Image 1 (cartoon, one colour):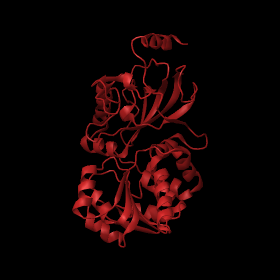
Image 2 (tube, one colour):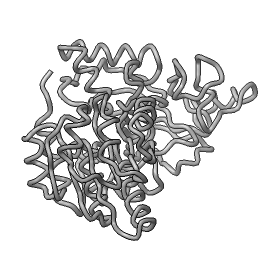
Image 3 (cartoon, one colour):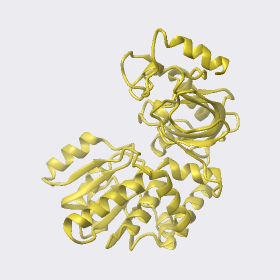
Image 4 (cartoon, rainbow, N blue to C red):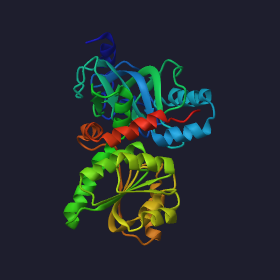
Length: 361
């Protein structure tokens, strides 16, 4: 046992570590790490923890958009992220409530860790930064603010119930991180589309709002693989529509503002059995509901979703739709998403095009 592990092991006389990370919560006492205001990011591991040397953060799309719009310069953007992490011991945007994930190398593995990781493994965490104890030690000096991928140095802690994927050797780190960040979306889309086909006796029509984004692109590919009989992508601009059409990811690609319910419903036309929401802006709930038939399913993956607006909107529209929250975890989701990138050239093309066209700050 290392000296660091010994020092943590000695604390268990007073307190046992929790596989859910309760022992890392500093305030308020008794809540889970995601709900906590502040976590303890001390890089000395408890016996069931793993410590990771961080190389890159991947801020989720809703959080990055909000931060970028609120902070004009790269310096201001860096300061905002550093302030959040310094104050909270984790990366949780106070406006969106969301975080992202990270890439790094395993530094130390507690003797009772159940994660199966080894020192030296390069991993992407498959749990949110909103519940991951995090320290940043380099001031984000290498981040120009032009992308949600943030090069940095620091440490992060994984709990006994955390999830991490060893990075694949056949894909660039930036691509793998982008894919793993949204791996839950295609896996759940696949499950819902196949379930709907079994229930209804025929393959469903599927609409993806935000079909040109990361989770939207993968969800389109997953729906196609699951046998969707009609596949509609809704995107905000003609340029994005051209990329999705060129990649062959949908039967129909329409341009509409996802925040305008009537515009979305008009653009989609005949209503669908499954709608998947992958946008990174607020106010898209009612359009998704209007595009979905009674008895259909809406899957909300966007962290900008207002679930009260969705529930009350469905009630106000007298629409009987099932509404699911995409929680980011489906068993086997990492390999499923990476498999789509490997086997569907159009998916990889869209991801790489997005990397080339990152906004300037």
